[in-house]
Image: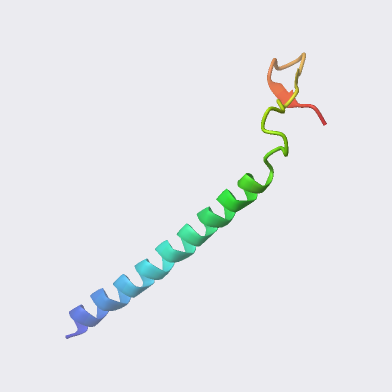
Length: 59
C-alpha cells in the first residue's frame, strides 16, 4: 500500500514539474515571437567585435 502511494505521489509531482517546465518554455517562445521586426523584409544589422570576431546586433 505504501509503495503504491509513493508511486502515485511521485507521478503527481512529476506531472506538475513537467507542466511548469512547459509553461516556462511557452512563455519564452511568446517573448521571442514578440521581438520580430514589423517589416518582414527588414534585416538586423550586425557589427563585428574587433577583439573576438563575434558579430552582435547594432544598438
